[in-house]
Amino acid sequence: MPDQSILRLPAEEAYAKELKALRAADNHPRPPNWLLSPRAVATYLLGGQLEDGTEIEPKYYGSRRLIEVAVATLATDRALLLTGIPGTAKTWVSEHLAAAISGTSRLLVQGTAGLSEEALRYGWNYARLIAEGPSEKALVPSPIMLAMKEGKIARIEELTRIPSDVQDALITVLSEKILPIPELNTDIQARQGFNIIATANDRDKGINELSSALRRRFNTVVMPLPASLEEEVTIVKNRVAQIGSTLELPPKAAPIEEVRRLVTIFRELRNGKTEDGKRKLKSPSSTLSTAEAISVISSGQALATHFGGGEASAADIAGGLAGAVIKDPVQDKAAWLEYLETVVKERDGWNDLYDACKELTD
Image (cartoon, rainbow, N blue to C red):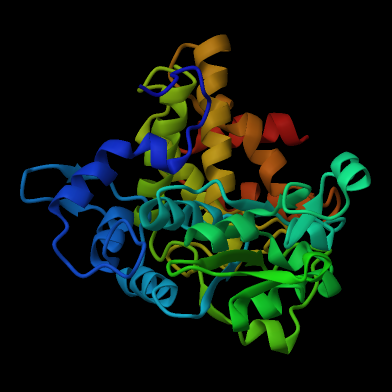
């Protein structure tokens, strides 16, 4: 039984019952070493009901075709690159894809500006290397090497944060499905089922472009922001409920009305116009993603639970709202104050939110 004190279980443990039920009901063709068929993987991501009545909770709200393309890519010899602005569920989708296909999402490389080639290929236990010389026992495999040996999915987070010369260490792995180990005069040959899911965002600073040679090895799927207000509200509401359950916050601490107001604000500022399209707005420099909306609501939920009346009010939501919008203290603040005066102040029933935000911003 999962340890309930863990803040966030990996997907394969958190949704173990669903994955087990899907495996039992799955009668479609499975690629070699896949635990589920592509059709069942898509059902796991998008949700549905099995013949035995088991409800599969949606993990991703959005285009079915997009998920089908991502799953189908992993059944070929092409790797998958999920790209888009921060907060579009790239990491979330990659984790669940790996869990459904391979049974583990833990073969993970976290991309950073200081990442070395060893993290993508292999390293050495230097104490053993000095004592015994190069040997298989002295070798420290990377998650990529382990995935090749076991025929599983490996994940690379923030691929474009990795220096370009280090990124190119993947070219032979992706094209030839071989990882050479010249020190041992051998190589690792990938087993069936091996593939890579990488994520990258195109908005943050400090990113490195992929070489054309490496980009050709990936099929790129662009993860969009939620298409409609109601879709985004549903995503925020469900994720906040999951986070609140883990943190043992009351389930009614975040009223749906407050979630809808916050999502409306984020969407309007992000799109540079009001939802009805009647007024143009200045957009701040912040991304105002769905992930940030979840964070603001969760923060308001915690404020209401521990320092308020138990149900998130406008004042609780405002506590994190200004900080999410204002990243540049000059331009963003001006855009936010203008939005407060021209939109929030004029809306019926939004006076409480206007007063709370104005008090914190002034």
